Length: 92
Figure 1 (cartoon, rainbow, N blue to C red):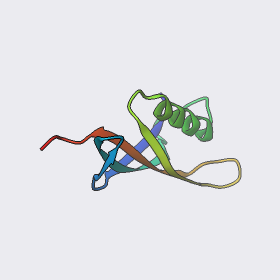
Figure 2: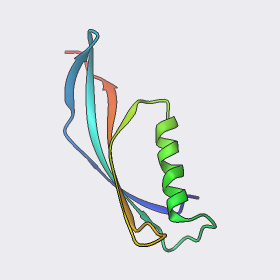
Figure 3: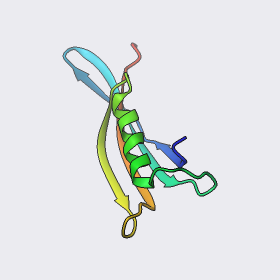
């Protein structure tokens, strides 16, 4: 397990027409913190990078808009990711 705690917040979808296709772009804010209840042999930084690789490798399109990481020397206490998820807009 990644031993991370995630808190998500969905934003309002933005409709776009790209190459004649109607798309909804949904901003998602994800707060990532280490889970102190679970031990892991990997550092929090390594687990955060693994989580970002998982998101990037997902077959559904998700663009990383922003990544903020905070912590002390040699540690990560929190990261905040802003992802833009792409989906086909419902036809009217």
